[in-house]
Length: 342
Image 1 (spheres, rainbow, N blue to C red):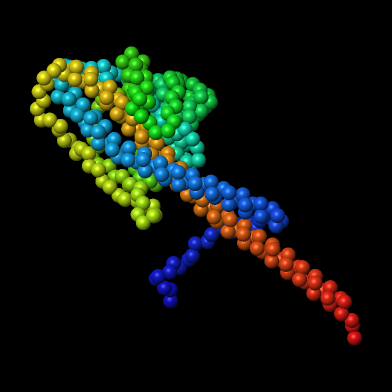
Image 2: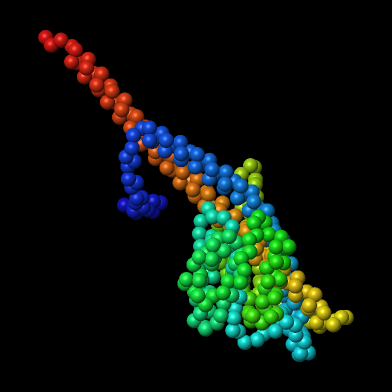
């Protein structure tokens, strides 16, 4: 009779091939694995310390950028009947799309950079099928390297406008550099639509590459955000879940609006702030996702180093025991050879 508390068939783990080397080589390999383990453990702790700061920036910045975008959307919706428009809200036939692709500056973060670049390439292929032009604004060293060496060969119709490197935690000044480039492209009608391609931070173990429309300003729905805060309790790392409600779908900011100044002046003053806040939020999301991915990758590398160290230690002990046993057998055989035969 089978017991319900245990599985009927235990999972079969793949057997590791034996290590074929001498004791000296095993000692050297164990030492190198120990060194690698210390490095990956230190990098995991550094990423864990930095991801808390990046996560706080994401959580604190989301309500402002979301509410600002929603308020601007309400203003533009209320002014549609008055035939009032600004350059950043004009919707025109799309011929060329600008993609702001945000990647990381360093590696050792799993597939973080690969996923966002793959998302950008997929979007470029979609635009190609629609016979639309594409201009890329690359942010981050990894994206710069990819678009420099690969994009002209695989997608010659794509034009790379600029390469921008951030380095460290992003600030409003760095976001303004990207916003100025986007503004000049859209106002000069070189592009008819601007999209952000970045990695949205969901939790410490989940981050998703997304494509978000930046210009022209459209309708925005953001119901809630679920974030996971990294904290320390009793000297140990802990994860706290938090739900931040932003704006309900279909909610109107003001039922009736009265403008004391010219609405065009108000929009002209607020739209640059909107651009800066949206780009800064995307940069902060990308940095938080990169640090979380690096923390996970270094944790996995540390675990693999521990397992490899155990395996090498077992092989070393077996080799050592076999050598000792062989020496004892030689001593016993030599003693037996010297014993006189009666």
